[in-house]
Each structure stands twice: as structure tokens, then as C-alpha cells.
Image (cartoon, rainbow, N blue to C red; front, top):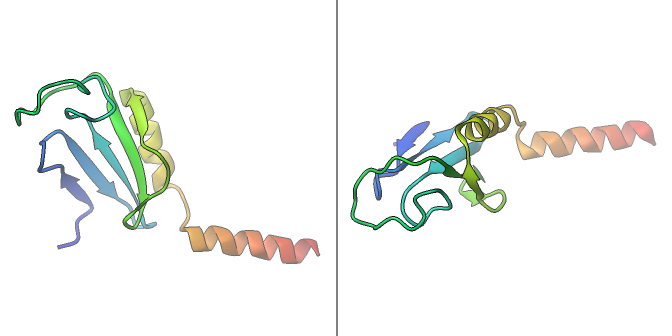
Length: 103
């Protein structure tokens, strides 16, 4: 089943959001993630955290390295920014069209 919102079932400490533009954002704050809980024990508890790790995907491919130790404001800004992106093939087409017009 394809879903737009998904909880990290492995640790219970994160979520994913998928957008119509093909991008998704992963926000994680469990043990081992680049957040204030990085060194917390892996005992399955749902921990709160001051910061979170954010990763951006297009389809199943990670776009860049995860963004470490993000504040709530930074997480919100990233989610909004990613939701506004065009699909990569659309961006490439626009660049190509611009290049043709400039010739």
C-alpha cells in the first residue's frame, strides 16, 4: 500500500512524508540518528528529542547526505521547501528550454 505518511516502525521515533512531486522527507530522532538522542540506548522506547535528522529522497534514492541536528524550525522549513520542488525531469526540461531560447 502506497502511503503519504508513514511512521518509523523499527524504532517508533520518526516519520516519512511523501509528496506528489516524487520527493519525500524522512524525519528521525531515535538512537543512532544524528540528533540529540544519538547515544541513547536502543531499547525500543519512543524517545523525545530536542533535534532530529532529516533526509530527502526522490523515489527510493537519497538526494543528499542527511541533515543532522535540525531544530523544529529547520525541519519545518525543509519539509516546506521539498514540497515546493518540481520533479527533476521538469526542472531539466525548463533549463533545456531556456538554453534553446538563449541560442
